[in-house]
Image 1 (cartoon, rainbow, N blue to C red):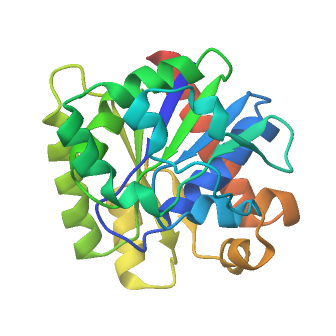
Image 2: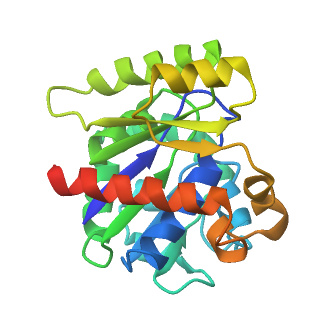
Length: 243
């Protein structure tokens, strides 16, 4: 099992859309048994996958009592792809983790899930706190989406400092240029400055994910955006193979 965190301290960078599309690629292209773990209280991953929330148990309950997280897992419409959904209870999870004093609780839960899944993908909240630190400790790779802008570059520096601050064994970081529009001079300059970084174009097909409530590869498989997502997933698999 390998775990991948999609993380940024800045909102509006395409984090959840990227997480959903990569999870779909893991299950549909690589045929990996995949779990998308939504840790963002906005519950965007569930919405994009067309999975409506249930109210039987709150998402933070598995952290409080250490019970089996499989009890909350939902199937999606895509073979091999399951979702561990979020809800409003996640907003208080940081305080709960501080109170419990369990710095590796999420990593232990992830290890439990690793018995049933080949890939666990975390859709992280856009914050730097105890929860994000636990995700970084549990992850084998951290993906950081970066729309070309000075604020995104600054946010990336914050992420790098946060990841490195978790210790010598911190996971590698893979920056991804997201929402890239090469007609814009700032975007073109960012691409020229970082030619080896994976890139996801600014495309209507990506925006349509929220309308279709499906990954782009499911409804527009031949689009440039779908090809870019597939290429990014291939790069991730190659990087994981070298770890």
